[in-house]
Image 1 (tube, rainbow, N blue to C red):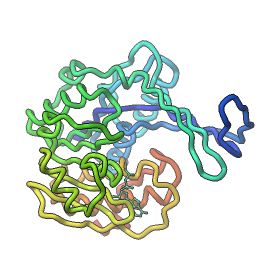
Image 2: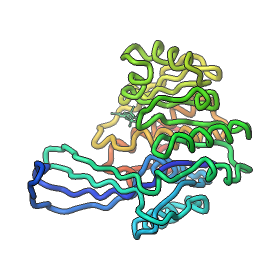
Image 3: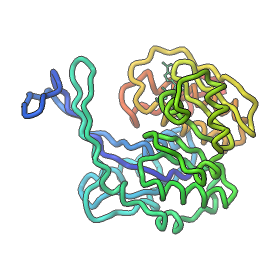
Image 4: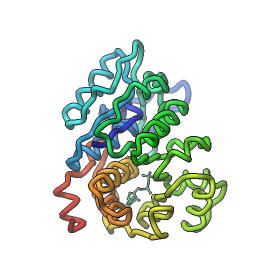
Length: 296
Ligand code: ADP
């Protein structure tokens, strides 16, 4: 199965003509309440594609925590590894203006309380691939990568939101999957994909999958010759969580035994479908939809 260790956020999106200035009140025209958090997004992406998925992390004791657990449960994600902490859940309050701008406050809440001890209490038997991001404390991410690596599992780390990556983390990572902005920050400069990948490999991870937006993905590392895997041409409407969709799908296909290139092609197809739709978790495609686009 796929084990996702990471964040769960409740996203409250309020629509307004424009984003208010400090001290100002503007009238909104409606709101959406959505399940989010990179961890939960990746779990839902993988589950939609038919994989058995477990989620580990923390939600708060407020009503948002219950809504987050219910949402994952409805998507057939096993939430036995999600603990409930006293206090608030992860909550993002997003003001969305009619000209497409966002102003966002993210309050990590229970996500910030995930510990290395939580991770060591998890059962890794039956897991094939572990998906990680950086929306829980770094020591918990490091513990997760190390436990999974020790158990011989593939570890896919999405370095988002970007942060300095400790060497002991990189050594336990099978695939590092930054987008272009994150990659540029990690190598302190913007360069050609192969050069970026070489720099990232030099700092210690086994393989790199650079997510290149409408260009697709560039793979390179110990398990894969340098390869540009082209994107599928689609009309992009909303790229929110495209990267999360890519990671969920990439994990599902690696678990199924695909080569990295084949898994990335499938992940490009899944992410391409997700960008044609509004929203994060609601935009994740089903296996049938991805097969229709990718031909496998
Ligand atoms: P993130 O969403 O993390 O910023 P990207 O923008 O690189 O990352 O998008 C992730 C993946 O989504 C890409 O590798 C690609 O497969 C797919 N994708 C993103 N934008 C497009 C697009 N305009 N057309 C087709 N596929 C896209």
